[in-house]
Image (cartoon, rainbow, N blue to C red; front, top):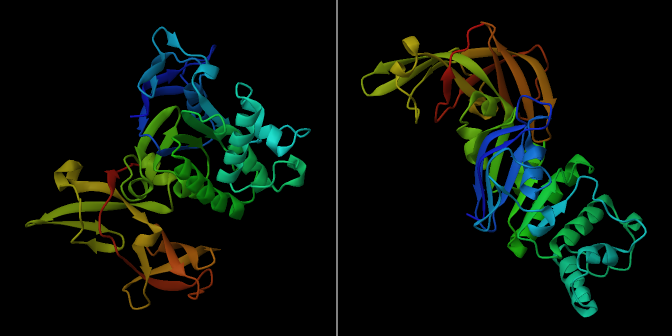
Length: 356
């Protein structure tokens, strides 16, 4: 693995609880990793520890097979050959784009610097912008300049801390796709911190969900969404609810009794013996619920959020259970209306029943 973090712990002076505790993750060369989680969960602290800006209190960090943080070892940030892109871009306003990009290339000859600057600007799609100043560029272009500056010294690893947070929502996701293409073209290994799930899904090969200093799951986006390892990941990623369910064995088949009816022919379903009396909570994603006027189960629309091609409906069953559903936007029902719904679940994600 190109980046390997094992059992990492970071503790700030004066605090009893570590900011990062027991975190292990790895990235292959050329992979892009993303850390997401609520504010204060430790994701930026982890990024800073990889950069060498925070000293670790346990575990190891290996970069290109070399230990850079560990027991008795702390390689200085400037010796790790790591590039960083910050939330505020940190561009020098009095310097041209070309001089900004060349800032970390003082060890090269003038000719080599010029060539490297041209290559970096070409990589991020800013050919011909070297003589311009940051204030003459859009926010997205400034972000590209910051990326070019970080890539110009040819780092072993690129770290990005909330790099798109100053941009509007539509531009954030589009730029995330573009940055992914740039990093893949340069074959750069990167680790990025964000709080935006769509951003994470757009750019990451591997995504880690953190909570209170712990890494809950390190996986690809599809697995995080469809097969969350913990209840926290299930709640944090995507839209869905937990519904009470009872698992029953019927010959070779497992039946899942839910407020929406019985689910059968589902994959990856645990045996009823996995839970006391087979009682558990089942995760129902918004895309597991289909609007069907002919369905026997009726639900009342409590809230609706327009998403362009679809609505996100929050529905309440007659028994009080809340359900969420993605419904095509031409099915424009009013809040308070009752509509028919049915589950379309091909695999079941279960968790121990939470008692009120």
